[in-house]
Length: 557
Image (cartoon, rainbow, N blue to C red; front, side):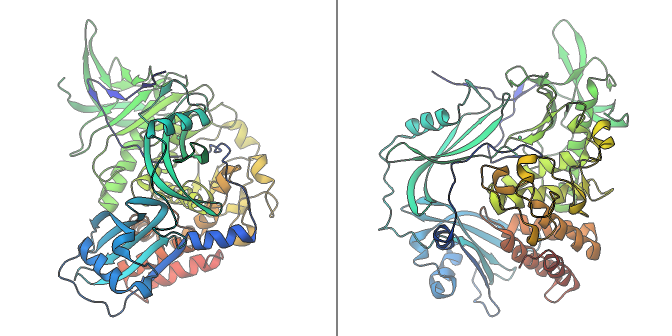
């Protein structure tokens, strides 16, 4: 049966935005087929995802900071980098120049032009066209002779298998994507289709399903849900907690109804807009519509969640633009779309790869999640991550995904170092649940999810040191993405105590957008953040020392 694809519509224009991996504040990922543990698997994983970090002190100067020169360097330094035949095994992914004048060339490891899942290498030039470092992860179990990259299965058949495996509903939020990759999994290298299927409903999903390109069997899968003339003018509204909000809105002339006003902001140059939708308290996206009022004052009780989502989205957009020179989540002005009143009593917010979704809460544990500026910043940062390091949403890379979202949530909402203090319901606060997580004192917050808490060795509180790491299977919280993130959160807090929020933000943003790759773990993050401090403030600087000290304190080396 043909699937229906529901695309967001803003007034009379369709907003087409990127489809990238996603995340949520609280959602527990559905079961993954990842299984197994022990020494044999550990040895395999060490060979299949080998970290690489080479720093050059006396590097060769090139005529330009180009991908071809980066490849020439790698060919000359195969013994140093451990990458054999880079001209055959690497494929250029992107070349970007940053505000320091450095250029960063990203490569995917590939065989016969087919990308190896999770294997990336980044070559870094300074402003004088000298290569100063190389980092990333490579798979040393793969050669051109060891894997057959020909597919027996069609991409359409792979898509059908993927949708059946995740019980995809009739209504999808956007057309599924399919890419042929080499997947290292449990001791074997598979040629597989990586299929992305995204849908809302009572159990929203942004599934990544790996289908064997030879047999059609599902090898692995995980849910990456984290979750006419237009003239913008000033408006106003009342937020969830009663705050007065100044808003950018748009006049809408509807047939036979006169002028109305939409929560649609087109006042920012080179931005596709900041637009807030009403999801109408159901789990379907087919009837979502732009939130519209009869006047420029949005003050009804039903308006409040939309007012905060709209206001907070602009605040987060302004932060990334003003502090980091980033134009929207993708850096290229993609539209920022929020949807409020999702579901019924829904205790969650998510970024689904295209937009932010906010539930109203059940009134007992949470209230409207759009009330939290830190929650909005958290979800929007997932969008930034999707368009930069693209950290895989499980195990340590997934915990880093959550951690960077928390860190920037706390940097945008700079009144404290807690997450979610503005969305907790009175009953939850009375029972001692006043925040979701704390960067300053992780041990002061109990892990509320009983299934996750069962893996605790520290009395069921969030860990602040690797000694308290929750060793979970990927079927529980994606391997601890929402729990173990508090360890790296605490490192960021400690660094900020020495350097302040502004420097922390600059260092972390650089690490996220320049050095981290999709399968980076905690140790990789330390290296990336240390190197970012060196890039910005110099080797041996107090900033580098503060970063080293912060990670030492939480046991990440």
